Amino acid sequence: MGATRAHITLPDELIAEIDSVVGPRGRSAFLVETAKAELRRRRLLAFLADPEPAWKDEDHPELARLGTAEYVHRMRRYVSPRQKRIARKLTETE
Image 1: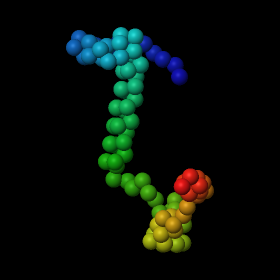
Image 2: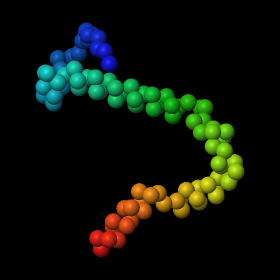
Image 3: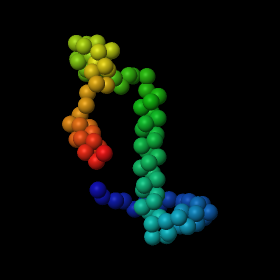
C-alpha cells in the first residue's frame, strides 16, 4: 500500500498527549490506526442505519426448504469436528 504525505493541523495539547502515549516517532502510525478504526466505526453505523435488510431470503434456500425453526434446531445440535476434538481432549485429561 502506498503512502501520501498529508499536512494536517492538530492542537498542541493533542500532539503532546499522543506523544506521551506513543512517542513522537509513533505519531503517524497511531494516527493511521485511529483513522482506520474511526472509518470502520462509521461504516458499521451506516450499515446499521441502512433500511435495506442485510439478510436476503433468496441467499438462504436452506431456510425455505427446512423452515427457520428446524434450521436453527439443526444448527444448535451440530457439533463441528473441532468441537469433537476439544471434547475428546477434555475427557482424556480428566
